[in-house]
Each structure stands twice: as C-alpha cells, then as structure tokens.
Amino acid sequence: MDTNYFLKTRILDGGMGQELLRRGLKPQGTLWSASALIEEKYHQLVTDTHLDFINAGADVIVTATFTARRIRLIQNKCEEHFERINTKAVELALKARDISKKKILIAGGLPNQYQTYSENLGDDLNLIEKNFYDQAKLLKSNIDFFYLDVMGSGKECEIALKTIKSFNLPVLVGVHIRKNGKLPSGEYISDIVKKYKEENWLGIIAACVHPESYEIIIKELKNLDIPYGFKLNAFKHIPDDYAIRETSAWGKGGNPTKILGSREDINENKFYEFVKKFKDAGATILGGCCEIRPSHISKIANLKN
Image 1 (tube, rainbow, N blue to C red):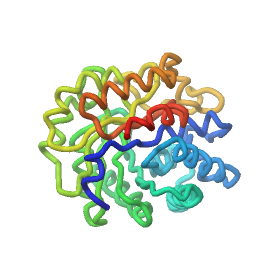
Image 2 (image 1 turned 90 degrees about the vertical axis):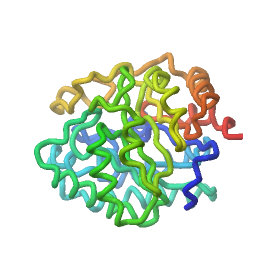
Image 3 (image 1 turned 120 degrees about the horizontal axis):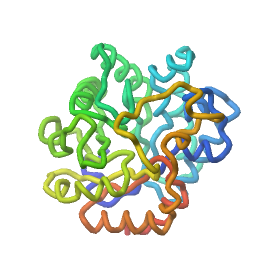
Image 4 (image 1 turned 45 degrees about the vertical axis):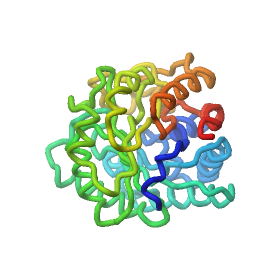
C-alpha cells in the first residue's frame, strides 16, 4: 500500500469490542470480543458490526483481535483457540469488506501482549516478542497493514516493531496517553517517534484515549514529521494502576464499563466537536475506540472531504 496514505484525512472505525457487547455478545470471562470469534453463533455479528462501521464512512477497519492475544486466552483457560480465532478475525473483516464493495483497508490489530494501559511487560521479554510474532504471523495474510494497539511504552513498541519487520508490511503505531500527556512509561509520544520511527511507518496515533488527554499533546504532535491522529474512547476513567481484575470484578457479562464507566456526554455531536477541533489542529487520522459507535463515525465521515 501507499505509505503516504494518511497524509490525506482518513476515518478509522470505532470500538469493535464494546459495540459487540452492546449488540448482545455474552462474553466468557474477560475475553470480550474474542468470545465472538470463539463461538460461531457470533461470527455474523462480527461481520455485521464491521460492515456498519464501513457503511458509516470508515476508510479503515481493525480486526477484532484485541483480546485474541495469547495471554488473555491463557488467563481465561482457552489458549487452544489462539490460532483459529486470529485467522477467523481476518476472515470476517474480509467478508465485511467484500459485502460492502468499498475500497477500505484492513488493519491487523496487534495489542499489548501483557497488560493494557500499562508499561508492565512482565519478567520475560522473549515471551512478549514471541507472542507478538505468533499473533502477527496469523494476521499478516490479507491485511493491508499492522496496527499496534494501545502500546504502553517505547520498549513495547521496540519489541513489536522488531518482531513484525520480517513480514514487510507497513505499520500504524498506536500508543496510550494518560491524563498527564505521557505514555504509562512516562515517555512522550515525540520520544517514540524520534527513537523508533522507520520507513514502514504510516503514522502514529494516541490510542484509546480521552479527548482531554489528546488536547494536551496537540502542540507536541504538530512538531512531528509524520501523519498523526487518534482513536478516542468514551470511558469515564482509566486508573493509572489499571490491570485486569479477577473475572468476578467485571460483573455478569464481563463488560469493561463495570470498572471504567461510560461517558454519556460524548454523544455523536460532542464527538464531532472534538474530532473537528483536532482535525483543524492538524490530525489526519480520525477514529474512535471503546464506546464509540457507528453513529459516531457517521457523524465525522464528512470531515475527510
């Protein structure tokens, strides 16, 4: 694909996992979207949800693989599904694109391989590298690029980038930004670009972030010689010490909003206001994450014109 793709304004999809839960997915433990890949009865729901984001105006959809990482499957005692569900995720995204007959791109979502919203990589970095590689290998066929989803540190980015290099695909880097304007590791987003940017980078985004957190880094982003943007969430609060709780902590149905809450103020109109403001400030990669629905994406679709 054209590595200058994001020099023009493009629309990313919204929060697949949360949208599946809204539409009736009953997850096992903390598997969330991975449950929809494990259980065949939900496969059509995944395809339909991808399709709704496409029809809302998304130029890019991300495979529903955030919780299909090996460690989450191990935590939920179902590692045996790892290969099948990652392959299935690409298949369902392709199916949605084929049905739409639109020239959208498919990003292979590579999430944290240990803890979300954290710099913690555990004690075995070789295992982190292996898990990135194994998941990327399953996704690489029939995707247009890799998307590093919600990285928490430069080290995590470094390991992931090194691991996927052999697959010769472009990459969009997504890092999580806290309310202090920094990654969980304490690094700035500009640090990540300066240290790790390579020719295959499509851009960098603030991933699964509050709009207010993105506002803090606008000036910093303007000084980066690379396309940038965001996937905004509508969670109420992501604590700095966030970590996956025991299954029971999430309540019946295992919805992340049990812990993180959901902001009713970020309706379609408010989302549009944030996105337009950030686009006017230079962002070309515009999208949503958790709690952002196809209706939100539809509202911002005309901003790419």
